[in-house]
Length: 188
Image 1 (cartoon, rainbow, N blue to C red):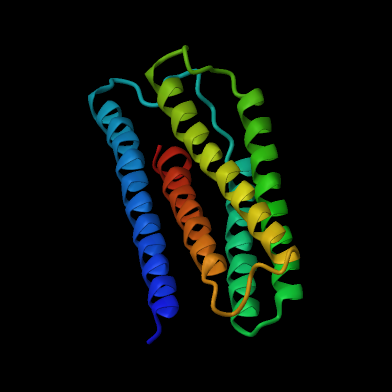
Image 2 (tube, helix red, strand yellow):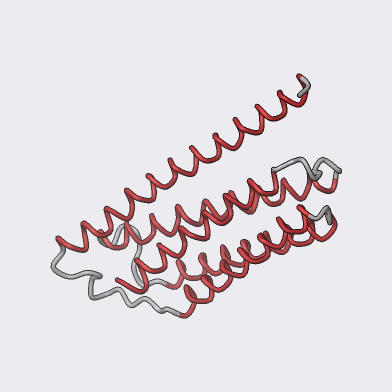
């Protein structure tokens, strides 16, 4: 193995380890938010409060959108592995578009709620959980656009694992949404 190959392998390992550590730290952040939600649910006499009437329609559509985006991201990784960078680029844009649709529906959901973060503890936890997740989706969309930009400049090749690593983050964000959706709209 040459020194250049060893250096690239070392950089890749450091990048992958850094991403994994970042995702673990994010898991702890969301874990604290979920703990707060369930703790308040246990100690509160009325949870959610009587003025909270959440509809399942928009969050269910958002769940379908993010599950679809996981599929398009998976197909982008598959296209990258096969060296089909044109298809990969289109799938990255499709995934980013689905992420933007998710964000638009989330903002619509927030604006139509009858309560606000300052209304009660439930409002604080609801908006904090959904806002933190939305920020992560926004970060994922920006990451996908950056990967698309790199692909358009010819900086993505078969040995570069940035597409695969980007998919790790995107699938993480999707998994967190399943937990948020289940907690806020199913378990309640």
